Structure formats: structure tokens, C-alpha cells
Length: 274
Ligand code: SF4
Image (cartoon, rainbow, N blue to C red; front, side, top):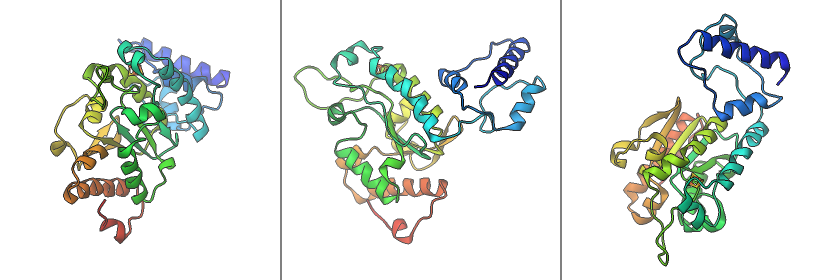
């Protein structure tokens, strides 16, 4: 960032501090953005508001934005490094093979969120790498989107441990999700997808901090920090329940996602059953 621009930001923050009971807050991601040399303010209205001494209480879609996908990859990298070294949950850090940060295009319009890695991902180091992942890939392909063009991340970056000698997966606890959530929050803040899809009730709890049955939650639009959020079943649920009616529900949720992304939908896609 150029020095005059940095001075401008500092002056604006000081003005906010003087005219408010609260100190201005900036997330780590926002501070990193300010440090990037090619970060530019592209919204005259927001800048004009600051120049007038107006209070900017929250990041707005019309505020400064990153230019270029490579910047997003650069911003994600230090968070990935933090996750790799993270030991905030000592029991998970000691039992994991590796952390699973996220995979895909940092400039994606569509971001999927799962709950936590399972035994397959623990070995592979990628979210959704096992049978559930294969089904997710099939769903994404049916949407006429390449898996590499979306971004996929879990709420929990470590595999939830299971008692020694036992096999299988367990859902993350609320405390584990709350501890790990800031990493996901930063990923979303950087990627800024046009649409989020939460896969399963546990992912919803990790992201929104609210519990509900999938019957109540899925199939309609919610929002996370102003980003449209579709909630649908986790692919693992479809592996356990192969009823065409359940698969169709997920597909109908994905059709809504395509519409929200203003993607063309063929008649074949409309009639499709997973
Ligand atoms: S689950 Fe998240 S917060 Fe806990 S140790 Fe792993 S990376 Fe850190």
C-alpha cells in the first residue's frame, strides 16, 4: 500500500475512534490486506464518506475490495500456515496425521462448507476426499462446474479423534468448532464467494452457531455476513440414505444455487436425479 493511502486509512480510523465510544476493529485479514502493496480502494462513495469524517461501522460490499485472484491465494497462505502449526485443541493436534485447510479456487463464486475431515481426508490432506467426496464431485459436475473452480473447506481443520483402537469418525464438538471457526471465517472473508453451501447440520452449527434439523433448515436461503447461504444434506447422508426422494432434494437445492449464480440450467439438469 502506498504511504499516502496508508496515512489516509490511519486518519480515518483515528476519526472513528474520536467520534465513537468503541475503538475501531480490524480483522487479521483486513490488516493483511492493508499490508499488500496492490490493495486499492475501488469504491468512491465509501472513501468519500471517510473523507467527510463519516462513521464506517462495518465492511460493506461497496467498500474496498481485493483485485485479482492471486491476492486471495497470497492472503490464504499465512492462514494455512497458522492452521498447520495450530495446537489450540491439544487432543486433536496430537492425534492428527495432518491438518486439512481447504482446496479449490481462491477466487471461486461458490464455496462448500463441510463439518470435519474423516479418516480418508486425514490421509489425503484434502476435504471431501473419500466416498462422500466422490459424491460431492458428482454433484458439482452435474452442476456443470469443475471441482477445481469451487472452494471447499471444513469447519474443523483437524480430524476429530476417536478412542484408540476404534475406527470411524465422530462429529466435532461445539467447543472444537468454536475454537477452529476463526480460520473458516477468515477463509470466507478472503474468498468472498457469491454463494455458500453448508453441507449438513453440523456445518451449519459450526458456521452460524445455530442448531436445527435439516428438515427445518434445508431448501431455502439463509445468509452469512450478507452472503447467500444454501443449506443442504451432507453427501454422507445420501450414501446412508439412497432414497431417490432424498437425492432429489439435494439436487433441487443445487438448482437454486445455480439460479442464484445466474448460471444457465438445461432441461436435462432440471430433470436430473443424483
Ligand atoms: S481443530 Fe482447528 S483450532 Fe483445533 S487444533 Fe485443529 S486447527 Fe487448531
